[in-house]
Amino acid sequence: MRILLTIAWRNIRQHKTKTTIIGLIMAIGIMVLVVGNSLMDTATAGIEKLYINNFTGHLMVTGSTKGRLTIFGFEDNTAMEQAVPRIPDYAQVVEFARSLPYVEAVNPQVSGVALVSKDDEQLHASLFMGIVPDQYLTMFPDNIEIHSGDFWSEGGEGILLNKTIVDQIAEYRDVVIEPGDRLLLTSVSQVGGMKIREVEVTGIFSFKQSTVQLDLTSFVDTSNARALSGMVLGHVTPAELSVEEQAFLGQIDEESIFMDFDDLFSSVVVDDIDADDDDYWYSIMGETTTNDVVNQEDTGAWQYLLIRLRDEKYLAQAQADFNKFFDEQGIPAQTLDWLQSAGAMAEMSKAVKSIFNVIVLIIAVVAIIIIMNTLVIAITERMGEIGTMRAIGAQKKFVRRMVYLETLLLSGISGLVGVIGGAIVLGILNLVGLKANNIFVEMIYGGKILRPELSMSSVIMSLVVVIVVGIVSSTYPTFIVMRTSPLKAMESSR
Image 1 (cartoon, rainbow, N blue to C red):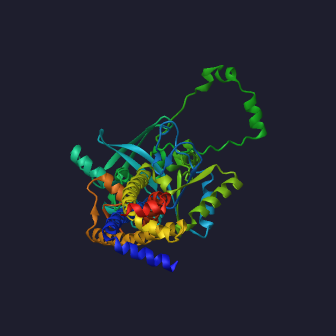
Image 2: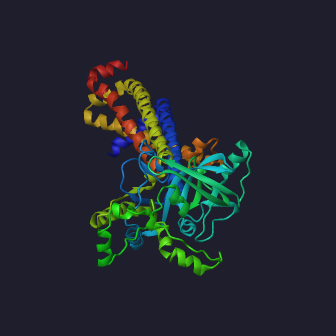
Image 3: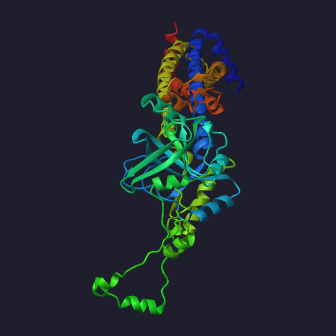
């Protein structure tokens, strides 16, 4: 092996021109791979961090359903055909989530879309998230900036309107929205019909890291969010009748009720009454606690439960534990990871990396062809030398190993040069920063500025690629030389 290594190194040094050409091609290829993949790895990590830390958490629990369900609702043609399902047995589900040692925080939400109006003028459309402010800020403590006003008071109602929406209304409708204004929110769906709610603007905010969808998303109190989503439920308390009352009602039919209308009316003497007399109104209306219960909403109605884990490594375990829990308890619910819950925008960003990898593969194929052609010329010119080696007793296996070892040495050296060059380029880009000049690029970057860092996975992958490319490229020219007889090879060098 030492002899082979010595010969291979000598050959590389002797054929400087060809070695430089091939090495330069490999080094440039490695540098492109390192820079490109590091850019995409940094962007992918940024997108993941953006969503997990600011909007989705690691995991989202929802009711079982068909269709492409995200944190913004359905993102397919079923959006108008079905309502976002509630989480069944929510109290039981959230209790189980909080019992898991690797769960750091949970946050329930409701989502929807509504038309924003003021003084009978339609102004804008807004996605909305129904939240409990304290729970939301515990889950995502640093993802919003409040420009004026604040969240609604505990137990109160209101809307925290997105600044992008406020600015667009001012620009295109010439209407200024400020905290304290009252707006009409209108939602329409085939499932829930039309819902209209009047809410007060309690504040104006913006997301520190945003996307196209988030720029159109506002926060609404849960009462109004549930109402707009068609989730307000009345509680029906069945009447308890005595045996005598049941027997009495059983004897009543339509004829007995409407037989003599005259019996239904009699003279009534009305004395002067005090409109503020609570005892009077109690006497004619009866006890009103039941009425209050009837108009109550179902405070356990939630569409999403967002879960943040102590570490992303627990994601697979968390999904397995939840699915097992759902099966054992017979709860029709499901879990979605952050990418599924983030929706099309995040998945599109991830898809860009796949497209880039395809481009890299095409570049690798082109590089193989170029390197192969260069090696064919280089090895063909050395045919006499190789023929002489075989004539004096060198076996085909020895020659083949020598050529492969030369290729590995050249690939390794070229790879290191390419990695160093790529690291220098990435260092410069990191200092300068790549600014997103439009919302699409910002979406790919996972933020407004991308500061790429050297990715070790891209370094390893690039080195593996260049070594494989070198070996594959040297296989064909080596095969040609091995098929040539030593005598003919020696004659070809004259």
